[in-house]
Amino acid sequence: MSFNLAKLLEKQKKNILELWMKNQLSDEGLREDLISNEELRSQSEELVSSIVANLGKSDVSNLDDESWSPVIEILGGIAITRARQGFSPRETGRFVFSLKEALLEVLQKEITNDPALLFQESVKINKLMDNLSIVTFETFIKGREEVILRQTDEIAEISTPVIRVWDGILALPIIGTLDSQRTQIVMENLLQEIVETGSSIAILDISGVPAVDSLVAQHLIKTVSATRLMGAECIISGIRPEIAQTVVHLGIDLSSIITKASLASALAYAFKSLKLEVRKQSLNTNHRQHG
Amino acid sequence: MILSLSKDNIEVVREQDVVLLRNRVKEVAVKIKMGLLNQTKLITAASELVRNMLRYGNGGTCLIEVVSRGRDNGVRLTFSDQGPGIADIGQAMRDGFSTGKSLGLGLPGSKRLVNEFDIKSKVGEGTTVMILKWANG
Image 1: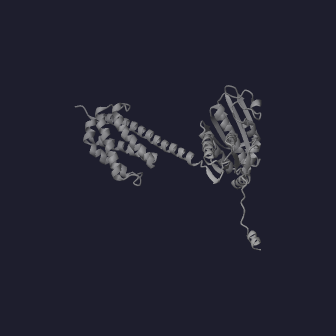
Image 2: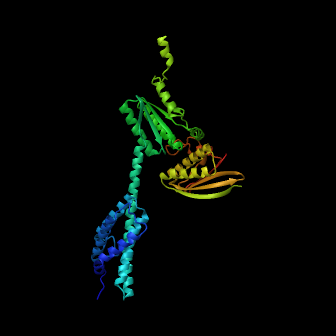
Image 3: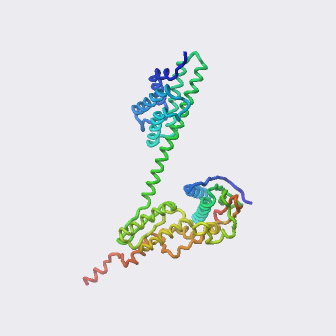
């Protein structure tokens, strides 16, 4: 009589699921805060059914085979959801590995009189589950990478706001490193806003830029030139003392650009060139009017 | 005699690694109590050289060392790449010279920012740049 692994596992499906659930629930890495037991059970059941159903009809050693794609799809779906929900790699790994333990345990119970057969079938299961684990990890990492990419986009978007500080005056605080891509976004936003608001003065505040090297300086100079072409004046503010000294030692010539130490002094300069005056209300004037 | 107290190697292959390297250099500089001005100078010089390495040398490695000489502590950075190399170092060290479209201040500028600067290059084999900044130099 030839041994049929698929049939045996099909018969023991319920047992496998129970064992697996027990393994998962007893594991200390169980995250009840992230996934409910019912959900975990339904995920597990779906996966076990599809694996067992596939064992009968497809080649165990070749996961590239078309017939495995439903299993991989289910597993991939679970891995991606877990990556998004914030499961750790270890917890996701335990999910798959504890199924392997359950499968092997059932196999051991069923094949009692033929060690050679047990070994042969165990190797098969091992191989299959190892391959499935690799798939899980690949998908898990892909899911994480997607999260990171989305966050990078979000950061790029939120970190370059153009603020209208006064009628005709724009301010653009830059925080973080200024690379080519970032400069492009900054420049686009700034020029667009100049057109929309008809502003004549833009203040670029670099208090939040950790280091100004020649590439950053070059980007700043380009932004200033582009602003000038649009008919607006660009002031660079927030130059810290150590940055000023470093720029001088590097030999970068920023003398053609109006630079100020703080946003406040840049704003004062902007008011002056727009012929605006900010004054403290003085009681004296009142007094004189009456007297 | 200069003693090397700790060593740390960082691979630089992507533009994102520039920020990583800068942060590592800053950590080391803070650890040996380097002043803010010298820190900024060192980090800026490192930033220039690592960008050069990425742009012209297709990436490479940076060795970060804490060194000591007598009572002085300092940070020594060695950038090595296997890029095309520099044919005329004298020309590359001149202000305003660039084969790319940059300002041409990277090499001469970083030399002015640090205490010791050494560059070796062989055409076809690669370039190694060493800089050293003392904590109170």
